Amino acid sequence: NAGVTQTPKFQVLKTGQSMTLQCAQDMNHEYMSWYRQDPGMGLRLIHYSVGAGITDQGEVPNGYNVSRSTTEDFPLRLLSAAPSQTSVYFCASSYGIGLSGNTIYFGEGSWLTVV
Amino acid sequence: GQQVMQIPQYQHVQEGEDFTTYCNSSTTLSNIQWYKQRPGGHPVFLIQLVKSGEVKKQKRLTFQFGEAKKNSSLHITATQTTDVGTYFCAGPGGTALIFGKGTTLSVSS
Image (cartoon, rainbow over all chains, first blue to last red; front, side):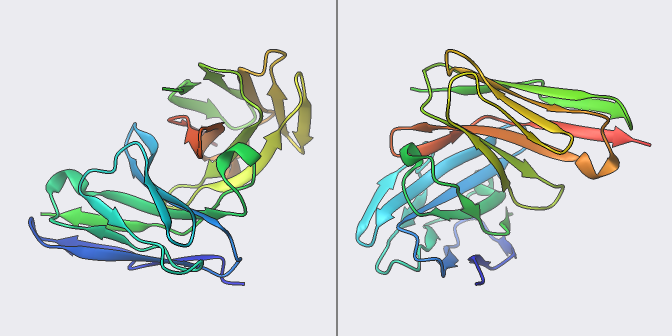
Protein backbone atom coordinates (compact mmCIF):
# COMPACT_ATOMS: atom_id res chain seq x y z
CA ASN A 1 0.00 0.00 0.00
CA ALA A 2 1.19 3.50 -0.82
CA GLY A 3 -0.92 4.98 1.99
CA VAL A 4 -1.68 8.68 1.53
CA THR A 5 0.05 10.27 -1.47
CA GLN A 6 0.30 14.00 -1.93
CA THR A 7 1.58 15.96 -4.91
CA PRO A 8 3.42 18.19 -5.48
CA LYS A 9 5.89 18.09 -2.60
CA PHE A 10 7.13 21.61 -3.25
CA GLN A 11 5.50 24.50 -5.12
CA VAL A 12 6.12 28.21 -5.56
CA LEU A 13 3.19 30.31 -6.69
CA LYS A 14 2.75 33.94 -7.55
CA THR A 15 0.06 35.92 -5.80
CA GLY A 16 -3.23 35.49 -7.60
CA GLN A 17 -2.37 32.19 -9.24
CA SER A 18 -4.53 29.14 -8.69
CA MET A 19 -3.41 25.57 -8.18
CA THR A 20 -4.55 22.19 -6.97
CA LEU A 21 -2.86 20.01 -4.38
CA GLN A 22 -3.56 16.40 -5.14
CA CYS A 23 -4.24 13.75 -2.50
CA ALA A 24 -4.96 10.08 -3.00
CA GLN A 25 -5.26 7.16 -0.58
CA ASP A 26 -5.41 3.45 -1.33
CA MET A 27 -6.71 2.25 2.05
CA ASN A 28 -10.42 2.58 1.19
CA HIS A 29 -10.81 5.20 3.91
CA GLU A 30 -14.09 7.08 4.06
CA TYR A 31 -12.76 10.08 5.97
CA MET A 32 -10.27 12.45 4.39
CA SER A 33 -9.10 15.88 5.44
CA TRP A 34 -6.68 18.69 4.71
CA TYR A 35 -4.63 20.47 7.37
CA ARG A 36 -2.22 23.34 7.16
CA GLN A 37 0.71 23.69 9.51
CA ASP A 38 2.29 27.00 10.36
CA PRO A 39 4.99 27.71 12.97
CA GLY A 40 3.49 27.89 16.44
CA MET A 41 -0.03 27.20 15.14
CA GLY A 42 -0.10 23.44 15.13
CA LEU A 43 -2.32 21.59 12.65
CA ARG A 44 -5.40 23.48 11.55
CA LEU A 45 -8.20 21.78 9.68
CA ILE A 46 -9.10 23.34 6.33
CA HIS A 47 -11.74 21.01 4.87
CA TYR A 48 -12.80 17.45 5.42
CA SER A 49 -14.95 14.78 3.82
CA VAL A 50 -16.81 11.88 5.41
CA GLY A 51 -17.35 10.12 2.10
CA ALA A 52 -17.59 10.54 -1.64
CA GLY A 53 -19.78 13.49 -2.55
CA ILE A 54 -19.71 14.95 0.97
CA THR A 55 -17.43 17.76 2.09
CA ASP A 56 -17.47 20.28 4.90
CA GLN A 57 -15.48 23.20 6.20
CA GLY A 58 -12.96 23.04 8.97
CA GLU A 59 -11.39 25.77 11.05
CA VAL A 60 -9.70 27.76 8.25
CA PRO A 61 -11.57 27.14 4.96
CA ASN A 62 -11.38 30.60 3.36
CA GLY A 63 -9.51 30.68 0.07
CA TYR A 64 -9.72 26.90 -0.46
CA ASN A 65 -12.10 24.57 -2.26
CA VAL A 66 -12.37 20.81 -2.14
CA SER A 67 -14.35 18.10 -3.88
CA ARG A 68 -14.68 14.35 -3.30
CA SER A 69 -15.83 12.63 -6.47
CA THR A 70 -14.27 9.29 -5.51
CA THR A 71 -13.35 7.56 -2.25
CA GLU A 72 -9.66 7.64 -3.19
CA ASP A 73 -9.12 11.29 -4.15
CA PHE A 74 -9.50 14.55 -2.25
CA PRO A 75 -7.91 17.50 -4.08
CA LEU A 76 -7.46 20.90 -2.45
CA ARG A 77 -7.79 23.94 -4.70
CA LEU A 78 -6.33 27.34 -3.99
CA LEU A 79 -8.52 29.77 -5.89
CA SER A 80 -6.33 32.88 -5.88
CA ALA A 81 -3.13 32.33 -3.93
CA ALA A 82 -2.13 34.85 -1.28
CA PRO A 83 1.12 35.11 0.71
CA SER A 84 -0.88 34.16 3.84
CA GLN A 85 -1.38 30.74 2.28
CA THR A 86 2.34 30.02 2.43
CA SER A 87 2.37 26.91 4.57
CA VAL A 88 2.87 23.18 4.75
CA TYR A 89 -0.23 21.27 3.76
CA PHE A 90 -1.04 17.77 4.93
CA CYS A 91 -3.68 15.48 3.56
CA ALA A 92 -4.94 12.81 5.93
CA SER A 93 -7.31 9.89 5.91
CA SER A 94 -8.87 7.40 8.30
CA TYR A 95 -11.50 4.66 8.36
CA GLY A 96 -13.93 6.77 10.28
CA ILE A 97 -14.52 10.24 11.58
CA GLY A 98 -12.64 11.64 14.51
CA LEU A 99 -15.30 10.77 17.05
CA SER A 100 -14.81 7.05 16.48
CA GLY A 101 -11.18 7.39 17.51
CA ASN A 102 -9.78 5.96 14.32
CA THR A 103 -6.12 6.57 13.63
CA ILE A 104 -5.40 9.29 11.11
CA TYR A 105 -2.78 8.61 8.45
CA PHE A 106 -0.99 11.63 7.04
CA GLY A 107 0.58 12.23 3.67
CA GLU A 108 4.17 13.45 3.52
CA GLY A 109 3.15 17.07 3.09
CA SER A 110 3.23 19.76 0.42
CA TRP A 111 5.41 22.81 0.98
CA LEU A 112 3.76 25.81 -0.66
CA THR A 113 5.29 29.27 -0.99
CA VAL A 114 3.29 32.18 -2.37
CA VAL A 115 5.34 35.18 -3.47
CA GLY B 1 -15.54 25.72 20.30
CA GLN B 2 -13.57 22.85 21.72
CA GLN B 3 -9.92 23.56 22.40
CA VAL B 4 -6.98 21.28 23.02
CA MET B 5 -4.03 22.95 24.68
CA GLN B 6 -0.50 21.65 25.08
CA ILE B 7 2.33 22.82 27.26
CA PRO B 8 5.13 23.54 27.00
CA GLN B 9 5.42 24.77 23.42
CA TYR B 10 9.17 24.06 23.36
CA GLN B 11 11.48 21.99 25.53
CA HIS B 12 15.20 21.49 25.29
CA VAL B 13 16.86 18.72 27.28
CA GLN B 14 20.23 17.08 27.57
CA GLU B 15 20.36 13.52 26.34
CA GLY B 16 19.43 11.22 29.21
CA GLU B 17 17.09 13.69 30.91
CA ASP B 18 13.37 13.06 31.19
CA PHE B 19 10.72 14.99 29.28
CA THR B 20 7.01 15.50 29.81
CA THR B 21 4.37 17.24 27.71
CA TYR B 22 0.87 17.95 28.93
CA CYS B 23 -2.40 18.15 27.05
CA ASN B 24 -5.62 19.72 28.33
CA SER B 25 -9.04 19.77 26.71
CA SER B 26 -11.83 22.24 27.34
CA THR B 27 -14.32 19.36 27.17
CA THR B 28 -14.42 15.72 28.23
CA LEU B 29 -12.92 13.48 25.57
CA SER B 30 -14.06 10.05 24.50
CA ASN B 31 -10.46 9.28 23.60
CA ILE B 32 -7.16 11.00 23.02
CA GLN B 33 -4.48 10.27 20.47
CA TRP B 34 -0.80 11.16 20.38
CA TYR B 35 1.25 11.78 17.27
CA LYS B 36 4.93 12.44 16.64
CA GLN B 37 6.31 14.55 13.83
CA ARG B 38 10.03 14.37 13.08
CA PRO B 39 11.65 17.55 11.69
CA GLY B 40 10.69 17.89 8.03
CA GLY B 41 8.33 14.94 8.29
CA HIS B 42 4.66 14.26 8.75
CA PRO B 43 2.71 13.39 11.91
CA VAL B 44 2.72 9.70 12.73
CA PHE B 45 0.29 8.02 15.10
CA LEU B 46 1.78 6.85 18.40
CA ILE B 47 -1.08 5.71 20.58
CA GLN B 48 -4.72 6.10 21.55
CA LEU B 49 -6.06 6.23 25.11
CA VAL B 50 -9.71 5.54 25.77
CA LYS B 51 -10.31 4.67 29.44
CA SER B 52 -10.35 7.07 32.37
CA GLY B 53 -7.03 6.89 34.21
CA GLU B 54 -5.49 4.71 31.50
CA VAL B 55 -1.71 4.36 31.40
CA LYS B 56 0.10 2.86 28.43
CA LYS B 57 3.81 2.37 27.84
CA GLN B 58 5.86 2.10 24.69
CA LYS B 59 9.45 1.40 25.67
CA ARG B 60 10.64 4.71 27.21
CA LEU B 61 7.34 6.52 26.51
CA THR B 62 4.54 6.58 29.08
CA PHE B 63 1.12 7.93 28.17
CA GLN B 64 -1.57 8.80 30.70
CA PHE B 65 -5.22 9.75 30.35
CA GLY B 66 -6.69 11.72 33.22
CA GLU B 67 -9.44 10.44 35.49
CA ALA B 68 -11.80 13.12 34.22
CA LYS B 69 -10.78 12.39 30.60
CA LYS B 70 -9.93 16.06 30.04
CA ASN B 71 -6.17 15.84 30.24
CA SER B 72 -3.33 13.63 29.18
CA SER B 73 0.42 13.49 29.37
CA LEU B 74 3.34 11.95 27.55
CA HIS B 75 6.51 11.24 29.52
CA ILE B 76 9.78 10.17 27.96
CA THR B 77 12.37 8.60 30.24
CA ALA B 78 16.04 9.13 29.48
CA THR B 79 15.63 11.00 26.22
CA GLN B 80 17.70 10.10 23.19
CA THR B 81 18.49 12.14 20.09
CA THR B 82 16.02 10.00 18.20
CA ASP B 83 13.22 11.50 20.35
CA VAL B 84 13.65 14.89 18.66
CA GLY B 85 10.47 16.21 17.06
CA THR B 86 7.08 17.67 17.78
CA TYR B 87 4.55 15.73 19.83
CA PHE B 88 0.87 16.41 19.26
CA CYS B 89 -2.15 15.33 21.23
CA ALA B 90 -5.51 15.22 19.50
CA GLY B 91 -9.05 14.72 20.62
CA PRO B 92 -12.32 14.23 18.77
CA GLY B 93 -14.42 17.35 18.28
CA GLY B 94 -17.59 17.05 16.29
CA THR B 95 -16.68 15.37 13.01
CA ALA B 96 -12.97 16.11 13.11
CA LEU B 97 -9.91 15.50 15.20
CA ILE B 98 -8.74 18.62 17.04
CA PHE B 99 -5.00 18.87 17.45
CA GLY B 100 -3.08 20.71 20.12
CA LYS B 101 -0.35 23.05 18.91
CA GLY B 102 2.29 20.55 19.85
CA THR B 103 5.41 20.44 22.00
CA THR B 104 8.68 20.60 20.13
CA LEU B 105 11.45 18.63 21.81
CA SER B 106 15.11 19.21 21.10
CA VAL B 107 17.83 17.03 22.58
CA SER B 108 21.51 17.81 22.81
CA SER B 109 24.10 15.10 23.27
